[in-house]
Image (cartoon, rainbow, N blue to C red):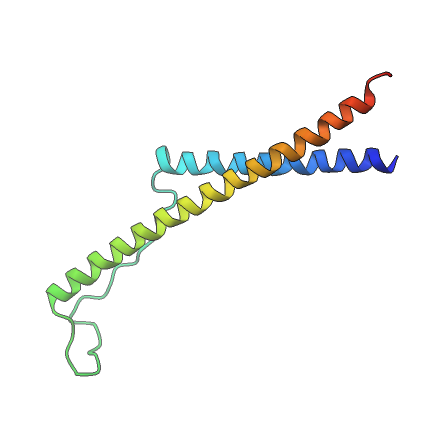
Length: 117
């Protein structure tokens, strides 16, 4: 009885892990190809140079510096978004790789036990 409960429990755990991994991959695919703005960060507009407080030397950023800063921020956000996507894909694939054999092994064992001898 305990062995049967163990086998069904671990079959369920393996199946849940696979389903979660597949859900993550489908979510990633939808965000990458259909809902392209779903993982875009919301960036609030910055203050104009006239309203920005001066720095320690008493001077505000020049327009060229502001432009470079904005471009650097956009590039950093894009790198972060790409990194997040790769992390999600890696995690989802790992779940599928671990969950599939876990489920298959325990489910086959259950099926062998249920066959008449």
